[in-house]
Image: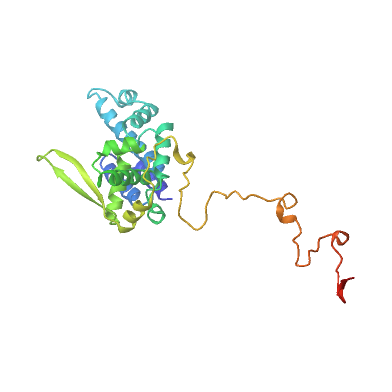
Length: 270
């Protein structure tokens, strides 16, 4: 793997060539040849090598021998622990991971665009989209975006840089003085993204209700009604419709109850 080659280069590099290996590491991370976990591990190794070299120089006595110089050098385990405190990504707590996953799953990105970003970058861009829907643009600072989305500030910069490279958004810098800047203005210019935001439900993805809230059934519209119509079932035996109707001859359902047909013969009825 490419990470193993960089690790061997770090172990073989001296104090002069170590910055070149560091630049190679972050270039490979930007190209996607090294994962975030591997880059963090290699950066800790580079920092430990740097601290070990500086510790040997600071602990060296001009009148001391090589044995004394080696005894004053810090232990490798202590150097690695110091390097881990100095560098590395933002600590991943349960709350930050929950915010990150909730923002990434809020549906602010179309599936085709979301597939081009990592989970943390999706959380950042979803927050940018939520601010854009609310205020027409996003003017939050990088630390604010990182804190709300539960990611590191480097992830925020990488997500905005990649989205800007793909032509999804624009970044307007606001300079106050030569060395002071206001927060950047991020605007979404992708037609696919803006059309998707018009179709999404405008709700806060950090809401505790989430997707468990029951959706309100809209009243009216459509060709069928959701409410059933109460239909009364008639009992024909109790209603008047069950009675037999009389014909012109006055016949009944019972033949014995009907009148016999009489025929007039020669002026009399038989």
